[in-house]
Image (tube, rainbow, N blue to C red; front, side, top):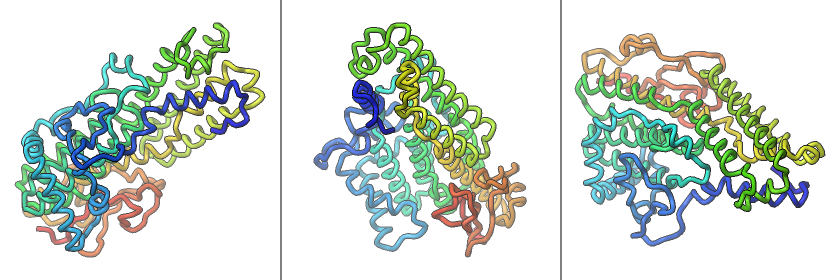
Length: 448
């Protein structure tokens, strides 16, 4: 939001408020340069609460090549030198952290069977924007490193361990999405979705088709994926966490008489007591109205992200417009404060729901292919149609939520494979494009 035309009395306090609101996020992307033996996790950030805390001690040297490794993970096929590089890195990390990784794999049943965390009322009441948060950069890097280990284990024909480790990384993403034992923010949930995708995009299917498991294992794995996928906090709940944290800040930190925090006192110090109360009521009201609208849209258009996207974009444009310095705002200071705070603090989350649904599709596809492989194990052939898939699975596949014509997921031959895919984030059929469509799974036509 441009404030260059605002009066000097408004301009600086609002910039201070921006810094305060986003301070916890502002310097999150990467730690300062350090030696190879120094901790990679930013020690100023909140440590993990979940099972991955055992791997919160990796070093700068462990992760210095992670960007190059990350570029190899989504590739459908690798050159010999790329395979050697990926497996070599995975082997190095595994040997260094073997005890921790083996302990996680051993605890697979407990991790798979546990419920996703939900914030308590006490946590909601205490939540503030300035609370310590996990190290997002390290979190992504850790997920990539563990999937490299899974790929190494797969190369060693240790398919069950590889699959379980992949699932554990995916569960790690779920835990982060749900707040890792605290109150999640939208950005924290987006990082969790990214971690889930690092694990689930192609890697579940690779391990499932690469190994030869018993029918019961396939069936149990499919059931575990479906159960935990459904147990996640949905987007409405995530947005409500944002709402409650923001309202707490206004209630207990911003609209306080004789506020001793300069970033807030500079902003509101000139308001009379009655105007301060009026401004607080107005500000909390428009924030609630904003989040109420999003909740309604997410309910009414749960399977129509393209509609949610348009509605949120329209809302964001209106919020931005109302937050601009105007003559009306100048003569209505109590409401001007609320309008400008809303414009500053509410991100344009129009694509967040798209990414939330995308992250749900990969594990769903893995659950479906696991049921198919269970059927193959019992002598059935790879299905040729969606009807045959549904007969094997015992449940109907949902329509493609990224198809604005409300069509089905697409299942068709592609070379030597059958592919199940969604239209993806551009809402268009790109013929099973790995770049533009969402590939739920790919399975050889003659898999036995």
